[in-house]
Image (cartoon, rainbow, N blue to C red; front, side, top):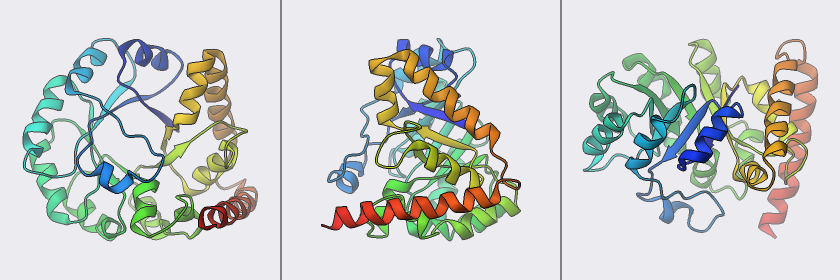
Length: 268
């Protein structure tokens, strides 16, 4: 399991790398995000291209992932800027059509690794066509916007309603790596991280984003943050998707109970 942290401050990025974070996530996406997510408490970053260059020069192990804006008239220029600044991976968010992905890959032209962010229900049906025609490095399933595109009140309902099952089956059958959503503190939060962790294991995810809540642990006590990351990684490594199949299915039932209760609270 790879852990990603959304961060654009050099000194903090260096520390996150030191503490075992695999990917520093610089988030340039602004186009349309406020309109889509303005009513929910989600991360809305104000990162800049200059952050990429500064952080790139400071890291020794962690990769830099850069999320650009959805496809627009400036996409080609933005991709050139982030590649020239040192991005290791470029992420395309919020696409709905094959043509958007085709244009993205044309602009990338094999120069860096790519990560496609599937976060609209219309995008899920495109996985097969995209895989057949482009060299996919990794897929990522974004739960916030995907849940909004479905009209859901609570994002983890995407998992308990098994919306991703067909897409994940395709990825497994074709050996495509895929990340999912985000994860918080192991033992706390609306849904404790240990429950989300087990569900990601059951689904076979290869990466996830460290949630804002868990980053706040870092802000308060760096030792606690390191302990949390180490605990999540240790528990992940202990789980076996085959041997622990029953345990993971029982955990899915527990997750479903949490989601049903939280979804009910949201509606009320």
